[in-house]
Image 1 (cartoon, rainbow, N blue to C red):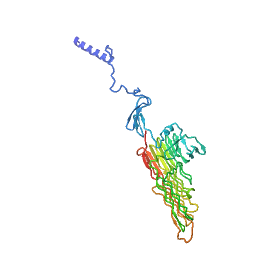
Image 2 (image 1 turned 45 degrees about the horizontal axis):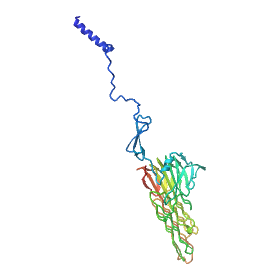
Image 3 (image 1 turned 135 degrees about the vertical axis):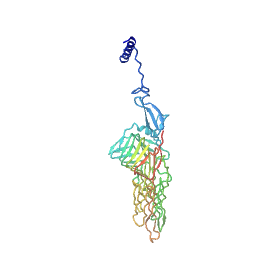
Image 4 (image 1 turned 180 degrees about the vertical axis):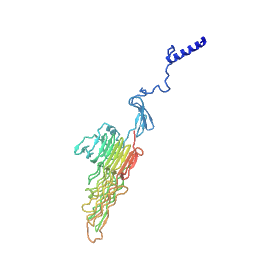
Length: 426
């Protein structure tokens, strides 16, 4: 081989050796990472743990618990950028401070049967006293409220009685599976019944010898029925007027229904249903019945007031504030039905003979209270005892406040139909 060829051959061998063995003394190039791969798999913090970041519409965006990512959640009542939190429920009738206190209270399971007294705050569950935190809330021109505070509530059959209106505020869900009632019974009013200047039924006239007009029924959400007149040869004893519709659809202030007129001006009467306000920060579910019905004794007492407030309300049961029926005319009035647990009017009482009038039905659903039947025995040819029938009680009021489209009815019923609105927030 000539020298030129040998020189070229040796240079080729040396180059291959340098490439394969990296042994020629030249420095190795620095590794260059692929674009955007520098943070791959990194757990370095990107924000402070649990830090509020922003509101995006109704979503609250914050840092996660270890500061490595953003997370978001929907606020049922909207996101509050100034307060750096979700908005909170602001219940009616000044109950917000007690809803805040409810977060620190225990869950309450009311067992099979339970009772609440709004007069002294006593709660009894399956025969045993249970301590539940409560407070009195004064209202102008309305009954005082006794509000109970719980973390969450599960209830079956519950009877509420006493002088004050009833309220319960819950940090979590409220579940009503049985009959939760603040209804009147005989002449015992429901808790928070409220007779203002116009809603109480009038007493029948008893000044005509051996004739007695029937009492009028109590009014609230609708007017009470008029009492029937009684006519004999001595003259006419007019029935009492039905009580007027009163109050307002939003149940602010919270109040119950109204009584019928008094038998003989001072004796027995049909009593008004009570007042119930249930509040939840999350959801109220009614698979049973919530009731504030009037009773039947003389005239019928009106239905009471029921206020439900939560972002979501689910109803497959019943919510009723029906009027009690009027009694049938007699020396001792023959009571009809108390307000029913459905949308059927309570049936008026039967008279005790041909000289008495039929009692009026109670108001329910879209049906107003019935009037007591009048009796005219002026042509009987002799003096007889005559008794007008008694008027039925009007319906009460029901209000439901939720987020828009937050009321979910799956076969449930209201009697009467409720007014609805948007739950206030803060």
